[in-house]
Image (tube, rainbow, N blue to C red; front, top):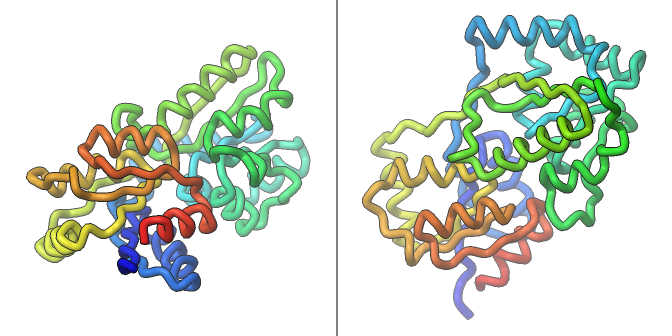
Length: 271
């Protein structure tokens, strides 16, 4: 039997380290190689927007967090953890999460689990479409919904971005007002000699790339412009990300849900 490939974890560093622990506990070889560098959005416009959000939280029907980093970014702003908790308790503010990872970070932040809406564990995908099936009945004309996201979000590079645009359209079709705030930036890692050496080694070994963001694929192409991806293998946690991987040249792409059971089973299927 052929040896299982090592899986390359391309998520931002905190999530990649967490996934490494989960997969190693199952006896799987997992390498941390973040292709998204996350930094707080600290420009004056963002800081002013966050101050306004804090002042107006009581007026929102719901706050949708696109990722764990969106939760961390908003709650890093002065006073916002207390203001968010107060709005949940006093005004019934709903907190929307597209997947279990985001919901878990919200709970770990001390926010009431009863205020968090996310797709069920057996949902076919953890994305905006599955979330909408849960939260649509909450919306009435005139409701305000805040979407907290990355400041560098571009639908042309992040397949999940189109899902959030879709969600905004659904909200507006019911008469809701959609507002957006970017609380962190996502950047391509610096192309240091050490990183280039690691990338080349993983490609030579035909290790298994795990992508949870189309933007990570874009960064990989930027870092390795001459690489032939046709013999490389990829796991993608959403159909839109899988489509991006195929467009990049990966011919061997498998889709899986973004939970440890599905990812582990997919890795083992390549043994």
